Structures are given as C-alpha cells and as structure tokens.
Image (cartoon, rainbow, N blue to C red; front, side, top):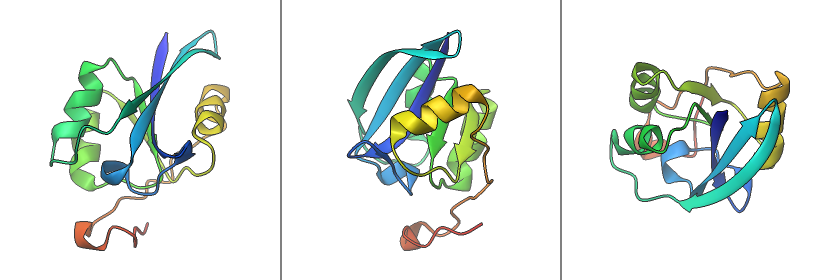
Length: 119
C-alpha cells in the first residue's frame, strides 16, 4: 500500500504546504485509490507537520510549494516530496500513481512572502 497526502484547500492542491486547510490522505493498492480521508491541518509550526504526517504512515506528500526545512525533514523520513502540483487533490494523487506527476523541485524560501513561491 502507498499512502499519499495532498496539502489541500477545498479539495484543491494548495500552493503553500504549511498553510493548507487540510490534508487529503489517499490509500492506494495496485495503483488504485482504495480509501480517502480528509484530516484538518493541526497547525503550522516549524518541523511539526512532516513528523505528524510521518506518524500517520504517509509515503508521499504532494503540494504546490513547500519550505526547504519541511523538504529536508520529509527526506530524512524517506517520504517522497512532490511540489509544483496544482488542480484537484484526487487528480494529483491519481496522476502520481500513474507516474505522470513529477516534482518541479520548487521550494519556498521566504515564509513571510508565502504567496510568492518561486523555483
């Protein structure tokens, strides 16, 4: 089983990981989504969310953008990071399972400018 978390707002991939409204969790088996769950974002504190999602058994995190600190923690936990995604969260998860979703490597450097994430 692969467990995919998508940082989302109203069912769409959010552009800034830590400030998302919730995480849509997709459990997949044999390349198909078999279970979906939505978990409210418990709060943005540096370093907290990657460990929280690791504790939930997440294997992959998908977001529009993400800070370098979070990327580093996910990498330490062997959780695959996909950034640069957009559109419906479930579509992003399905695209990942098909091998069609590739990370752009976009990392947010300026947290005070959260709406201006760049490559």
